[in-house]
Length: 390
Image 1 (tube, rainbow, N blue to C red):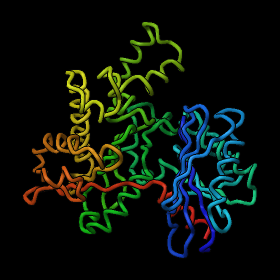
Image 2: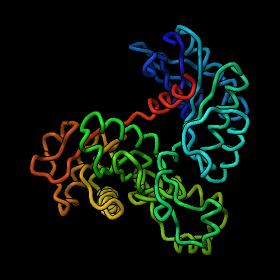
Image 3: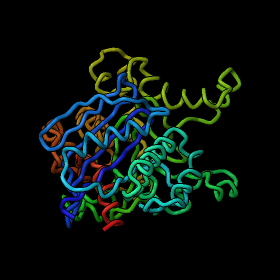
Image 4: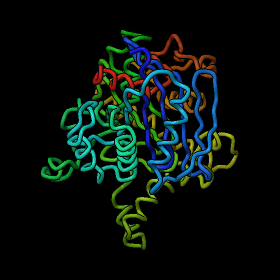
């Protein structure tokens, strides 16, 4: 198996991220990464294998020529790799009530993913296009799906329930939660870094352009901030987080009547961008002296700390808080502001360790341990794929 190659595909609405892994007897070993940004024209494939960096033009587009884009991408990448392509593993945003773990992709599984398109209309079709492209180009290659919602299937029914008629809940209108692949990785890393902390009550903060929090006990998901969709929870770069349904009714009555317009508004015009009117990027906002930028950052930190308080109610307290993803791993100011609002929990941050992005950033006197742990969703996808195909 040492010569076999596995690729992970993470298909977003405007990007395709690829992980390159060599399959070893113990664990898939990451040897490179690639990315195509479909907002660029012409398309370029940027990828690395080991220390080598490559940039290749790609013919085609994100529409009818998508399969040819995948074909060129495979040709470029595999030319630098020994052995055969054994499998392609895909990140699927929504598993609904059907998929509670990774699965080999056959006709039945693909049909099941297609049925979930209404639950994730922006992301599910992109992943399905990648699956069908591989099916067409390399029918000999095994395909596996990993689901962002699966990690949260351990949550009890009362946590997942919305206050709507029971029949709707039974039909699937319920809280699902997302970023599950990231949280699964954080749970595994926490077991390595601090086994005792991993056994206790931990809250992981996945803070990126998309952002959510997850409460875990002994590495098992008990509650999370995102609910029925990835719009819910704390404010994000361009998504609003919690939003009073009455506000949507008001917008619909005053001119925003088309579902597509509302969807675009909620996914692309709200959040930190909407509040600041400047940017959805916290790096830009932290460097901006305007009161609007400051208010957006303050709101972000207020909602994060407030959600930690709510999650404490679900799991009965907190022993450990983990910061991860782009903001969580790299922005000390955000972590410090969140910690400051949580002093009532006995949280004290070590300012020097925090500025250095150290792994442990709590002061010795803190009643809650604070960690900064980089996430790696691609490694989880690869690990789950190997477990199925080995």
